Image (cartoon, rainbow, N blue to C red; front, top):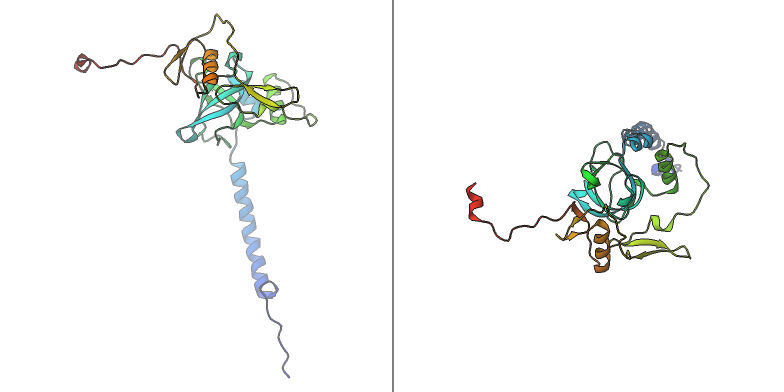
Length: 246
């Protein structure tokens, strides 16, 4: 009686198994090399170097994406370096499509740490010097150490600050309650500031200061930010035929 031959399943056939192992030995090193190229080809300045040349270091929340994400308008939540009066104001951040950035893709509502250089006067336009950092305690500590020119020391785990990741629409302020809960509220009023400069809002209205724009924006629940410094330039209601004769 002829001996029965056991069926040959894929993984148990000697020839197939050997061929599979040979293919894996050839493929895996190339995959590993590709991963190394992807993750190591992107090199940026060290955080300390970017901070040294930065005019403005802030945590800010993205309110609007512009030009496919190459630019964003972001609401400043906290100023680590730069003019303190920018707290609560909106800055235009450019250069997010730069080739030297490793992780600069943002979405509306994202809160990040930005290292920026001034492009236009009074920080109306800025440009990123490094990829925006996520708001974490280690990143906050590293940034604070760089700003104050101190060595970074890892701290024990602590809870995140409630307002660091809380987004308040319409230029609202974030306040922490006695129970440690982040709550949004509108600014009450604007203190007298002899150095306040009028701003032109996106709605074409001139506001006495950035603070006044924030108060009106929140009370009326309108998404507003300063388009330019100074009073808005009024457009003529009609054009004189003489203007075409120049």
